[in-house]
Image 1: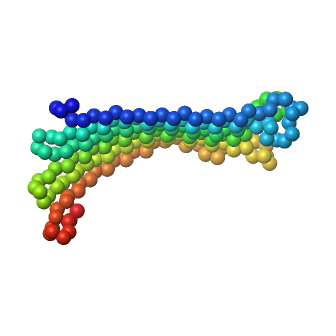
Image 2 (image 1 turned 90 degrees about the vertical axis):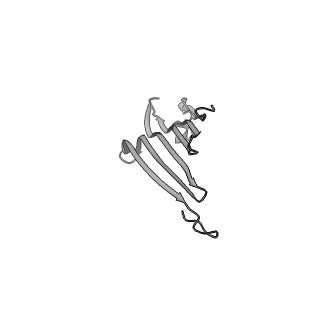
Image 3 (image 1 turned 45 degrees about the vertical axis):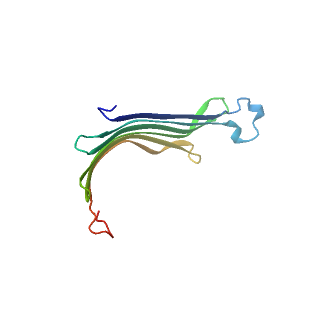
Length: 169
């Protein structure tokens, strides 16, 4: 809008999955691979909004808020002689970051421009990995982690042509 500036909203999403089924008829088993079920999954999405406005002072204000989500899975199950499945490998990872940033650029004169800004982000993650120990015939936890990270940054930048042949930043 002319009064409030320009807004942009965007998003994208992707779903991907693959399933390799185990052969349930034991008379058709020719190798161990016939008895494995493998589930692969990758779901991702992102959404955001940006805002740009030219302020009455001549300053340029830019702001963006973004978020994304991803979930990945690579799980394997094994079909036992009794035709029941046991989990062999399990790898699942979820990540969900959210970011907000803003900057203000102002020209004090044709020779001096200053830009300041800030960036804040937070990320949630959940990772779980189980592996099957074929020697001891048991499931082992390789990794299990759930957590959050947070980061905040601010900056200021000045551009000043010190002479006609070079500029100081």
